[in-house]
Image 1 (cartoon, rainbow, N blue to C red):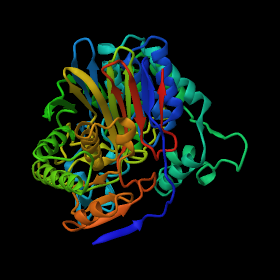
Image 2: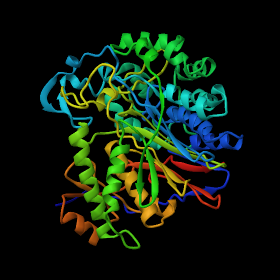
Image 3: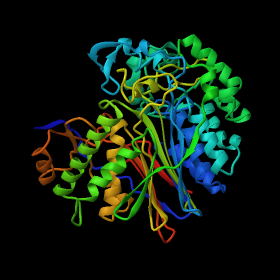
Image 4: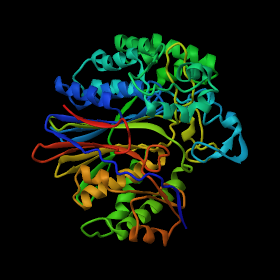
Amino acid sequence: MISFDNVTEHWAIAKPAASGRDGLVATNHYAVSEIGAEVLRKGGNAVDAAVAVSFAIGVVEPWNSGLGGCGFMQVFDAKKRTVTAVDFGTVAPRGIDPATYALTGGVSPDGFGWPAVVEDRNLIGPHSVGVPTLVAGMGLALKTFGTRTWADSLAPAVALARRGMVIDWYATLLLASEAREIASYPDLAALYLPGGHPPVAPGSGPLPRLDLGPLPGTLQALADAGPDDFYRGKLADRIDADARAAGCSLRKADLEAFRATIKEPVIGTYRGALVHSAPGLSAGPTLLHALRLLEAKSFGSKPDAATYRAYADSLFEAYRVRLATLGEGAEGPSSTTTFAVVDRDGNMVIVTQTLMSGFGSKVRLPGTGVILNNGMLWFDPVPGRPNSIAPGKRPLSNMAPTIVLRNGAADFGLGALGGRRIFPCVFQLISFMHDFGMDLDAAFAQPRIDVSGKPIVTVDARLTGPVLDALAARHPVHVEQNGVLPEGFAVCNAVMQGKDGAQSAAVYLAMPWSKATAA
């Protein structure tokens, strides 16, 4: 069976990779890529740029990430030739009661296809909130690997927030797509649905800006006081008070207890290359499993029907094992962001950070402007399983920021957003570049498939003829445009380091705001 429900566009999209030798930054927003590149121009290293990008991107993409989010970072040290992971994944508040998430007997209409919970408490609203951990992760990364001050790192985000969020057609589209749920949460709706409707830019002329309320002041207070203030200081007190008033289980004690950690990444080999991905409760181990399965296959000079059939077979098996052993459910929406940085010395950083769903829990704390994640979404609501809800527990996530080394040097690093579509994307891009010698331009332009746990293969509409026939002979196939809404495929960004010092960076072609910028 082949479905062609979402094949309507008839244009080709190109967004050439950026190149240089003094560092590059690839993000989902042009203004933020420039911020990261400016940090590199001023002598900052890749981690300095990544921390500045992390806070700035939360201002311009508040539905994807922000102070209330979490994530993973991978850092390649060019001198030591080592890769290190910074783990700042969320945890469940210690005051939650698993009985709060009683099952209805149905199937969840949203999230990750879990059994439905009463009032969707694990998906949205105050009971869905996990501990916000991004600030701790960035603080630890800057302290361990960076060279700039904390205040300097937050200054660009403060400036962006003070100017307000630019409203163009894409911002309107994304806000409109979330409007129904935003409208149910007055503190969020007051900001992002002024007058009860998504803000809209005029037909021509200067674009309007949305006032971000207390967020600029919160960012400035955080810049002045340091990251610890978010967890043990005055900001923590304000977060605690607002979270209590909103009905969340999150307390200052949860903030005080959290520590981001430095870890070894998970490491695997693929045809002689060393693949370093996110450790622990991430998609990194499953990515390496899929690559081990693929390594047994042989390919020709370019991707063909046999190649994509091998991709599908490896992904189906890797997901079969993941779902059986790690307890994760079916596909769901994701609002995440990912970015990639390489500096002039060849140091490389890949970050994936998230609020989980669009605007996370939809709980915006009025005193600080912090939007809290809905980390409880990642847990299995059925008791007694490996990923079941429990106080203070870490959930299973889909993030997989990855750095690939060849001959001891960083070759490329990449990350993706898109929930369970993340690791299939990273998996194929690694194969495109390693098996077929593609550069970033060619790899990002190459059509992909997606297999992410359901008994179906989503196929890029450009893959016709023998490829489509070969896949359809084995599996139900859904043909989809590689666009921005709906997202049939993960959104990816990457950087590459050549042996001769030449560098390149590429972004997801269909993302209107994405840009790779040279320092």
